[in-house]
Every structure is written in structure tokens, then in C-alpha cells.
Image (cartoon, rainbow, N blue to C red; front, top):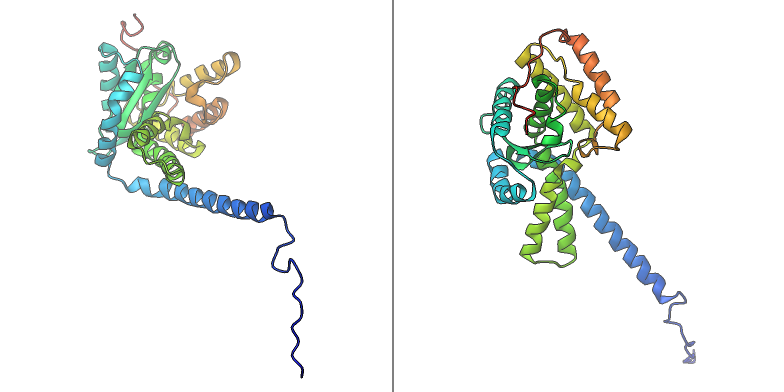
Length: 278
């Protein structure tokens, strides 16, 4: 057979597709991989941080406590001492592990709010305390926040936020340690925004059991949610309720709990006479 050398058509090795199409396909693929990685890290963080020793959580909180105290208007005094004494009694009723030390901070601010954060720290605002009619209602608030700490909810919320934040920083090539510390601080300050509805319901139930153990009943446990319900209707959603179940639903759950456990009768404990003084 006679050898032939055919002429190769021009453009045979050139794709007929627009070059940007391949680029965007690659970009989309990389984005999906990154999103999947972040999602996986978030799930793992929520599961694994529960096994972190509380002592290690306290060490992390120690580096942030000063910033929290400086950021918020902390006002030591007899209010804080009363809150701490009440919390200590509720800790015994709730049977927290001995290593879990609870520290309550009194906040001289008008906000109707309370929250728990890393290392067993609970912050309670004056605006909320001014609306408390008795110790039992206040105990429900503290017992709820103590339950979050017992369940390691602040660490779970922080762990998820840190995992995603630090993963994004790594992918973006940010290695500045000062910026990393700032991310850690900001995420820790916002742990309450990461509490799920399931966490809130579990904390409510734990708080009710605590009040029943401590007082022998759960009278006034729904008072704080009646207050929040009025705020929802008149002034918008309080920060305390940002991710929480509806107040009306929680009041109904408390009512069922009281009748199921026979804890709807008893004597209310008054607050000290000086409690609502300036």
C-alpha cells in the first residue's frame, strides 16, 4: 500500500467550547468540595467537642473572660453575690459534675437578657432582673443557663463556629494569629446564637427538674416566658429568644410538666427587699 500523508485539519486540538465554561465548571466543583468539607467539619465539631474536658474549656475561657468582662458592663456587688449563691444552690440540685464551676456575672444594662458562655460563665442583665417578681422565676432563668453548661451547649456552638471560621481562614490563606484570636473571641461572644431549639427544650426540661428538686414545685417557672411573650408582642424579639421556641409553646410545656409531676402547688420564695433598688 502506498504511504499517504494526509493534511491534518486546522483546529483539531482546539475545544469548540468557550474556555470560560471549563473554568466555571472547575470553580463550581471546587466550591462544592469546599462546602462539603465545611459541612462535614461542622457535623464532626458538634459531636466531638462534647468529649473535650471541662478543664480545657475553662482554659480557653480564661483567655476570653477578660474581654467579655470589658465588653459587657459587669457590676460586682450584692446582686451578683445573690445570683451566685442562688446558682450554687441550683448547681447542687441539678447535680453538675464537681469540675463544672459556675460563675455568674451581673450586668448593669437595660437589656432583658441572660446567656451562658464558655467555661461555666453566666451573664444576667439588670433589665431582666427588674422584671422578676420572685426568686422562683429567677431560678428558672439560672437553672436554664446552668443546664446549657451541663449539656456543653456553649462549647458545641463555639466548636461549630470555630471549625467553620478557621476552615475558611485556612482556605483563604489567612495565617495572621491576631486575626485568628479575634475570630475565636467573636465566636465565643455569640455562642447563644448557635443554640438549637432542641438544646433549648432540653435546657427547659432540665431546669424544671432542677426547680422541682430544689423547691419541691415549679410554680412561677412560666413567669419569664410570660414576660418574653409580652415583649414579643410589644417590642420585638428579645435576644434571649433569637433561636428559642415560641414562648407560648414553652408555657404550654411547663403546664404539662407541672400537672404530670404534680409540681403546680407550693409556696413562692420572695426576692430580698433590696433586690430592685438602684
